[in-house]
Length: 145
Length: 231
Image (cartoon, rainbow over all chains, first blue to last red; front, side, top):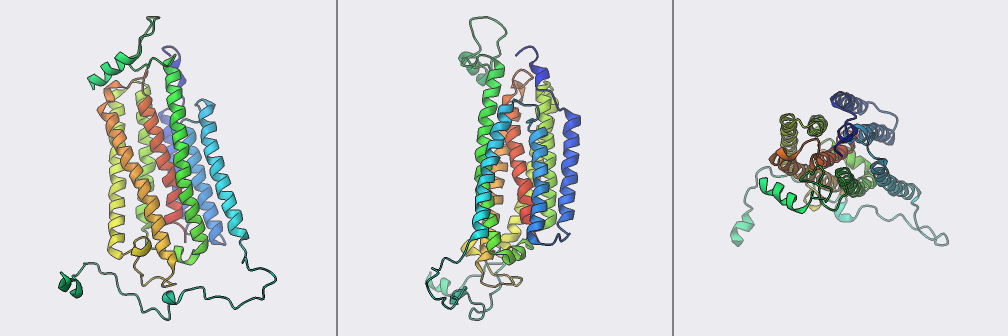
């Protein structure tokens, strides 16, 4: 450890780190700018935002977190984490896109049930009261005490 | 600080070969390098659990957004874009100062390391200050999670559960992230307190807390576009 150790961990350095920071700030600017543009659909915009975020995450992990120069085992551990996160997200998306009404096929189609309960129906619910910015004592409560 | 050094001295670093001993070399590791690598693998394993914990919240957020798209767009307009952008820049910059501090520790530049750690701590304070401003603004407006949410005149679907759900995720995720920042600030303070112990021979805590700081930054990299920029 006394020999060769110090050079071993000294890849990177201030120049590389500063370049990484500049790249990260540029990508932040791009992601803010892209959010003002309509790419066709909400999910297209989200996909673009997440792609840029992932590019930033890769920059952070490779350079700031030294994965590029580290022992490969650390990169494998990190990749495994994201792999399982990917499996998690993929199966959720499959579920989300393939949900169907589970009414049995041999049952006659019934009238669509009310999606919104009565208490939440905007026509029946009185207009929302403004949220109090300053809490004033309620009359009833003062009497109780 | 000196007691820590002597303590560790008593526990390790004295192998029978009588060669160069580092007081921070624990006896159950063959070399300092093995000790460092072991600590690093442990840290990365912990970081994976962090990714998975936040991952669950991100998936929940995504599914809720698919269920209440209009409500999420409405609710997102209550978040100030400038505050999110400012915090992103502050956090990215603090990640850079952190990696510079790690580099200074690796090259035994103590004063430089301390300076960069202080800047990182300052950035964390700015981040939490902006967070405080944002949270108090939301408390005033009644933009609160779950049953505490107060309907807003801008809600296009009044009475929908989507708004309360959005703010439940908002406070849960940014709150958990904020707690991570506070813990990170504590870790940086600990590094500053023990700054004299770190040099090119032994800087494991600086390196590991740096990794922690970067993963917190990385989580914010995803939080920022999903919460502040979706419209």
